[in-house]
Amino acid sequence: MNPEIQNTDVIDICELEYDVAGVGAEESSSEDNHAAWYLISYRLPENGA
Amino acid sequence: MNAPAPLDADPILPMPPQIIHPSREVADLAEAVEREFDRDEPETFWRCEDAFRTLLASGFAANALRDELQTIVDDPARIGDWQPNQLMVLRGRSYALSVALFETPRRYIHTTPFYGMYAPLGTQPLHYDRYRLPANYRNELFDPSLRLEPAGSGVVRAGDVLQLWSREYAYDFHVEQPVLVAKLTTAPFHTLEWLFSKDSLRAWQANDSELSSTQLRVAAYLLGRLAHQSSLEPLQTMTTHPHHAVRWAAIQAIGRLSRTEALAQLERAQNDPHPHIRRAAAKTLRQLESRT
Image (cartoon, rainbow over all chains, first blue to last red; front, side):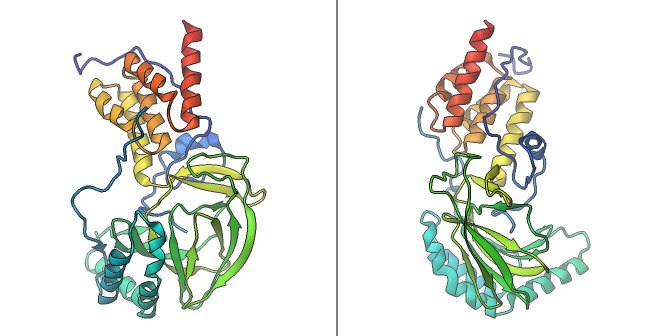
């Protein structure tokens, strides 16, 4: 397959029943979790207080 | 399905600890932890307490902070190894030493997906409440019906060390005044950090415990949106990651790249070790069937 050709035959795959938020997220609802993916705080290898 | 391969296993090459603020006392601690602590046996971490206490008695924190301050004065462009309220002093492959300022109480009670030893520095003691994790708590399986049980309160004063027994308990720290805390912690041994409501004590949310998991999920999401066929192979590799949310993010991204491969992955995912993945795969396949 030509790697430059992009596939338009996509499958919509559902979300997990419980979303997992990103490191550093403390959102109050699961709806916020996708946005929380971008709230990456640099805190390796552990998680603050 | 084969058991997920440990993608995040240690590289073959050993990596020496990164001592960000070199001093004799910090080097001594690094040596002791490297000798005593085996990340495959997390309980060995407690053997490091004597070395941590020796470090605390040395006044290392003031030295590290002075050193950092001088370095910033000498080089204003320096970024350093800071988080908003924490200075990293030492990073090993499976542990870290930092000095943190606990300034504000947290909104939720967090589980700690790692072992830790916390010691207040200066005159302010560290007050905390402790909660027992539910008997049927399984870290990788978030369940909002689970609830913490109060298990007492405590206070740690200068010179004392609080051991965080994170497999059994969650801790909530009171912060009426800012408290400076020295933290010696292991790398996470759980994939998730759970958050519990302070009012109901029920589980509220789970976060990735490792930054790399978040990064992989973000990368999978973006690769799916870019839909370039060259991304297929790395995404296939990600479907064997130990963290279920990373595996699922990879499968979702494959759904935007190759229908054939996505269907194969969904079939396989019906036998995934994680029940949330099994159910989501079955649900998606049912939805696809109903559309044909």
